Amino acid sequence: MTPARVWWSAVRPATLAASVSPVLAGTAVAIHEGSIRPAAGFAALVVALGMQVGVNFANDYSDFTRGADTPTRIGPVRAASSGLIPPPRVMWAAIVAFGGLGELFVFIFFGLVATCGTVYVESLRLTPLAVLAGCGIGFLATAILVLNNLRDIETDAAAGKRTLATRIGRDRTLILLVVLVCAAFTMPILMFMLKFAAVTVMLVHFGIPIAAVPVRAAFASREGPALVGALKRMAATEVAYALLLTAGLLA
Image 1 (cartoon, rainbow, N blue to C red):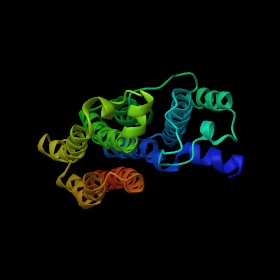
Image 2: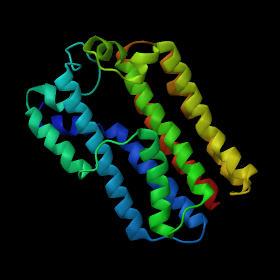
Image 3: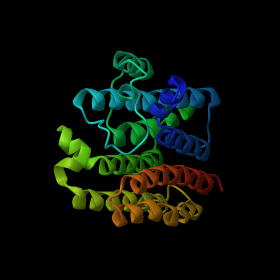
Image 4: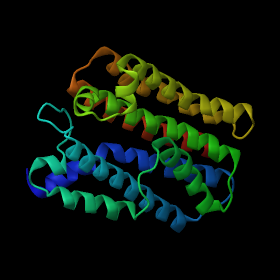
């Protein structure tokens, strides 16, 4: 592979759904509540994408230095372990992408902060609807990370990398995955029951069959390629969730 293709692989395009989805959901909430500032929303998207790429590069560098990226690892090509990109350059790329903010917890940043932050910069206020939308997006963003750690559970354990999956084991990690997905699809029900949105917000539940595919794959197989596919489908689930939430709020 060329250095350019290695860099692109290290970006992990499939994970960018975790950046786009909360901004999309936050924009829908802002429009639903009567105000939007497109320039501010675009700025929020740029920041969210930068943070996601920074997380990916930092993880790339961290796994290389810990020895977790062995030849037996299944997944996209990593920049630092490829031999084509000097590891210090990967670390600097992470710092540039982060803008010096550091790594934040997935649920908080890629759920609550990204969604509520988008609502705030576009409407200059925060509402309970924004929080519930942020929770829904955050649960699915966390589910992507859970699938990633489930895929790498054996190589991470061998390298001494202490992820949540290596701490609680495969079976409990699968249960956590189900809980996260179920929690995400509970949020539209709360939005409607608390009268923050009309019944059309239930359109989000058309995404349940999409979410069921990666969950079923995670339970059915321990093979790396199958779990890589599940991870990508969970990212697609998050995008579908955000789109359906947007349609439900704006209908």
